[in-house]
Each structure stands twice: as C-alpha cells, then as structure tokens.
Image 1 (spheres, rainbow, N blue to C red):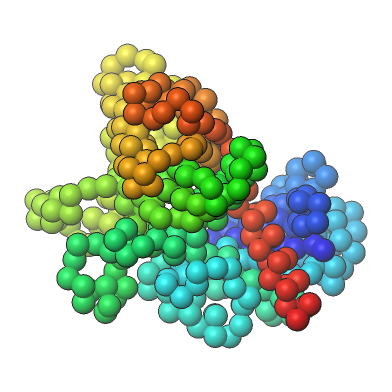
Image 2 (image 1 turned 90 degrees about the vertical axis):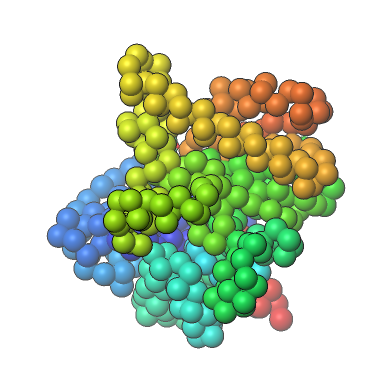
Length: 384
Ligand code: ADP
C-alpha cells in the first residue's frame, strides 16, 4: 500500500510517498514559500531532483500541486490519486488527549484546533494541510501522528513543574516534550541493532538538529525529556536558549524594556548557538569558526562547550532517573554527522557511564514512522 506523508508548516508543505510494505520512499518534495509571489516546488523521484516555480496562494493549492506532480505522466510515480491508500500528517501538539497516533475525524480536528493554543505556530498549518487533503483527496483515510505522543508516558513527577497545581489544571501548563516521533523511531531501531527487546532496554536518545532534545527511554517508554511546555526548554539549540532561570526573563524585560513578544523572539530566535557565538545557528559554521583565531572563534568554542556540557549533564541525569543505562543514541543533523562529538562525549563520561554502554549513531526517519503508523491504523480499521 502507498501512504502519503504530509508535514505542513506555515509557508511550506513537505511530502513523501511511501511503499510501506517495502519501507521504501518512492517520491519526496516540498512546496515552499506558500502565499508569496515566489512559490516553488522541489521534488525528487527515482533519484532525480527537480525544482520549478509554481503559483501557490494557499495550502489547498499546495496539496493540489503535490497530487499533480505525483500523478504527472512524465515525472510522477502513480497513475492516479486512487493509488494513495492513506495520508499521515505530522502534528506537533496533541496535548494530553493523544497518547498514540490517531485516525482523523471531525472530533480529532476539533481537538487539534484546541491545542493550537499550546502550539500556535505549528498546529494551525497542520490543520490547513488536513483540511486541504479532505477536500482534494476526498475519501482517503487520514491519520495524525503527534510530536508529543511518545512522551505521554512520562510520570507526573517528570512532567509537572513546581508551580501552583491549579495552573496545570486551568491551562495545561506541564512538560509535554517534542520530537517524539524521532525519539521513538531511533529507540526502536536501537533495540533492533542491539538485538534486544525494547522492553529490556534503558536508552538515552539525543535528537540534535536545529532543535535539540533528549529523552530517557526506559523499557520502550519515554519517562523524561528535555523539551517542556514548549520546545524552548532543555539543551542549547540553533537559536533557542534551552534551560534558563525564569527570573532572567523578568530581568531582561525590565532592563531592556521589552514586550513578551520581543522576549520570546530573543529566547527562541536570537539565542542558542547563534546568540552565544554571534556567528551562526548552524553547527557546521560554529565548528569552522571555532578553529580560527579571535573573538568570534572564542565565542564559537564557548557555544560548542555549552552545547556539549548540557548533553553530558542530561546523560548523567537520565542514567540516574532510569537507574541504569544500556545505550546512548545520537541522531538528526548534528547527531548523525559529528562522530567526533559522540567520541568526545563518550570520552568525557568514561568514569560515569559503564564501559558496556554503547554509544550509537542512528539516522532518524520520522516520515517512515508516520507512514507505518498510518498504515497500521488504516489496516486495523479495515480488518475490523
Ligand atoms: P532540523 O531540526 O531542521 O530537521 P537537522 O536535523 O537537519 O535540522 O539538523 C540541522 C543541524 O545539523 C545544523 O546545525 C547543521 O549544522 C547540522 N549539521 C548538518 N551536517 C553536519 C555536519 N556534517 N557536521 C556537523 N553538523 C552538521
């Protein structure tokens, strides 16, 4: 069966078409700059990459463009949209309601809408994608796969903040965690690689990309993670500060006389590797700059050291909360491409982490997991 995976942002729609039985991606691409005068389509099919300009005023048009290219007589991969057996959507926030991937119904759509309050930048574009697919690919089953679901197994002692309890009850203020699809994918792959049942393993998964997070995965379940109520908490990231004394926020607001929106921009878009180094949010640039001389080099080195310090600190913490450790997994752009970083962390922790603990690099594939979940949910419904 062929499954279409859609990941909609506010101005982009990424897609991948999978043959799920063969775990194979048949075609992939992205419609970019939706709503601008310079929208474009990048697509890849049979190893051949192409780029073209398109007119794309909204997400409905984007989905139509994706269907057209998939069924294009010259560059397409399927004859008609009827070959698409199901559609899986990446949805960032599923609140406390969605503990697993879920078939999309009007009720599910209302809930995703409700959680837009918790993920105002991410849930609304996912909904645009879902609604566009219901119109353009009418009758094809859709499934939502949530970034937060995998972490719903965290116990209250891990997800509650030390705030007045009524704020949790009133507004749902708690740690949710994100990147769940990636943490789950690499944790499952690690069990395969190690030849052990996931239920017998204590793993720490490190998703180090533009956004970075770690999870303590005990016996196949996430029991703690570094991102929190929003993706701002935890590790140092490309442009996000990660962990911070909340009092710093009030202090900056008072001293710099800035609004909540401005402080949010400072913490989310101007901090992290970029903020500390003053050079770039991109790890490759930071590594390059840190090898040179001068102020930028020193600050880049400092950004790198903060980055590594936090990862190491959380490895120690998660080993403690799981009362043991079998493997540490590194994934995403930085995790998959920096073997020196993995070696450095392994060496730094040699007196803390027992020598039998494996340090593994496992490429993530969130889209494949979305396709697999979608297939399994549709298959189960059909056989009922
Ligand atoms: P996203 O979170 O947007 O999916 P990625 O997983 O693609 O991001 O990760 C992007 C990060 O990966 C960037 O900081 C980039 O510098 C880093 N990265 C990519 N290739 C390398 C490399 N060869 N060495 C070190 N870092 C890399």
